[in-house]
Every structure is written in structure tokens, then in C-alpha cells.
Amino acid sequence: MSGRVMARSGPPEERPSRQINIVLRNSEPPVVSQSVPDSEAHPTAKVMPQNSLFTDLQKELDGLVGLDHIKELMYEIFALLQIASMRSEAGLLSGAQVFHMVFKGNPGTGKTTVARLVAKFFQKMGVLSKGHLIEVERADLVGEYIGHTAQKTRDLVKKAMGGILFVDEAYSLARGGEKDFGKEAIDTLVKAMEDSKNQFILILAGYCDEMDFFLNTNPGLPSRFPIVMEFPDYTIDQLIQIAEGMAKERDYILMPQAIVKLKQHLLREKMEGEHVFSNARHVRNVIERSIRHQAVRILNQYSGGSPGKLELMTIRTEDLKLDK
Ligand SMILES: Nc1ncnc2c1ncn2[C@@H]1O[C@H](COP(=O)(O)OP(=O)(O)OP(=O)(O)O)[C@@H](O)[C@H]1O
Ligand SMILES: [Mg+2]
Image (cartoon, rainbow, N blue to C red; front, top):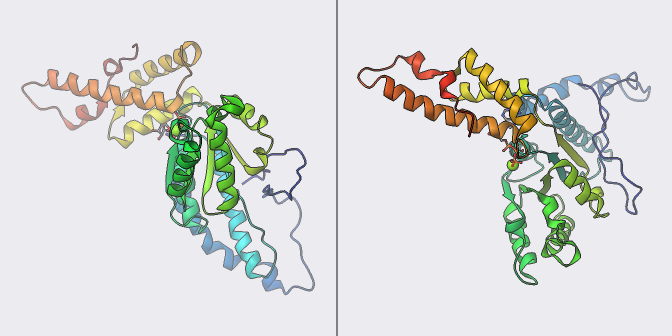
């Protein structure tokens, strides 16, 4: 596990910093204090069994292709929580942590999937009481008249208590400037973060550039979101791996020629597509559509007899109808 600093480095702030800085890489020798008995200085036996708390999350994270820095960041948060509880047991300051986050990335890069895992993880670690995820967007938060937005937003915050409130395309709340009701939603969210500290986690998600712009135009905001996760576009190889995983999950196999065809299609879509390429979501749609086409093909082909198990599992080149 290499170390990294996971908090954003922002401008100096008027309030004491609540940023989380964790460096896991152990480049310095362990501190050996003569005044501390050796058994306390190396409490390995006590630490190891608790790592099993991380195993379930790790299994789910490992099921995701790529996202290595996010997997690493989750381990950092896990380590932070473990050490904080040990420090508080040892009578040391462990400081209140803030876990509100910003997720930056294009469509289909795994933001919602990771948010769900994060919610479960925090519940298991005792940070959140319920660990559910409420996913909302601008239309869910913003109302039609003065006061309506604050009410709608407060209601959703209430629903998210004990879990995560995930605001997708959060930058759209700042779209209309000062007079827009989106501003009221932001103000209400910020107030809820203050009033209900540690009772829910707010995740703001959206495209990279737009989120940067959004955060920069709201000087009070960046410091409230100490954890920033970036979700890069998947490479073609990662998308193929995701496709194979999705097929396998559903008890299907992609024939090698089908994989070649899919690869060429993904290359074209990524380079020349008219819309923002939707990464793993695009792959999921392709796989699901191919499964439907395979069903029709097999039904026509075997109108009299019954296909074998392997045939039922196999996605062939002709099942991938890729041009819309
Ligand atoms: N790294 C990955 N490995 C395997 N499957 C993935 C991965 N990332 C995303 N997926 C799958 O791709 C689909 C889309 O992912 P998800 O909904 O999490 O993306 P998103 O970033 O929230 O997209 P959007 O911005 O459009 O809401 C889901 O079916 C998810 O399981
Ligand atoms: Mg999503």
C-alpha cells in the first residue's frame, strides 16, 4: 500500500482545518520510545484481527476493474478510523473527522457504484447508523417558489440521515447564479452539514471540469469536502474486462471474435462518438442488448430442438449489433 495524501490542498481558511491528511507509506523507522513498554509500542496482535473488517469491502472493491487509487483511498480511510479508535482508547486526541466527498468523473465511470460501497463501509465501521444511499439530482432538490427548495432539500436530507446523500450533477445547482433556486438548495445543504454533523455524509458528483468550476465559484464549499475521488475514463482494455465480467456475472461467455468486434466498436465510440462516452454504462447496455439478440437468434435457430448449455451461454459476433 503506497502512501498518499488524500485531502485537497486548498487556500488557507478562517476556521481550523478539517482536512484529512494520511500518509501510509512508512518511510521512517518506527518510533521506539523508552518510556513506553515494548508490548505497547508494537501492538500487532491487537491490530491484525480487526483488518477483517476491511475484507468484505475489499472483495467488493476488487470486483471492480481499475479504480486503484480509490481502492487505496478506501484503505486509508479504514486505517484512519482504526487508528482513531485506538488513539481514543489510549487517551490520545483522535479529532472529529469529516467525510463529505466530491466524486469527479464522466458518466459510467463507477461513481454511484462506489458511493453504494462507501455507504455500506461507513455503516460497518460505525460512522453511519444505517448505510443507505439516497441518490438525487437537481430536480429533486429544487422547488418552484421561494421556500419550496429549502423544504424539498431538508426532506431529502432527513431521508438520508444515517446514510449518504448523493447529489448527481451537483454543478447544475449553481447553473443559474444568485437568483436561481439551486443556490437555496446549496445553502440548505451546507446548513444541514453544520447542524447534523456526522449524521449523514454528503457526496457531490459530476463531470470533472464542471465540478471544479462549481467548487471554485463557491469559496465556502471546497473546505467542507475534504475527500475528493476522481473517476477517470476507462481504457479500452478495462472496458473489455468489464464487459467480460458483466457477461460472466450473467452466465454468458463472449466469443473471442465478439471481443474483437466490441473492441473496435469501443475505440470508435470513444474517439468519434457524438455524445460524452458513457464508459461502463455503455458496455452494460451493449452486453444487455447482445443477450437479447442472442435469445432471438437461438430461438429462431433451434425452433425444433433444444440448444446445448454452451450455446445458451455463448455470445457470438452476430449477437453484437453495435451500430444504432
Ligand atoms: N470499475 C468497474 N468495474 C466493473 N463494473 C463497473 C465499473 N464501473 C462501473 N461499472 C458498472 O457500470 C455501470 C455504470 O456504473 P455507475 O452507475 O456506478 O456509473 P456512474 O459514474 O454513477 O454513471 P453516471 O454518471 O451516468 O450516473 C454499473 O452497472 C456498474 O456496475
Ligand atoms: Mg451515477
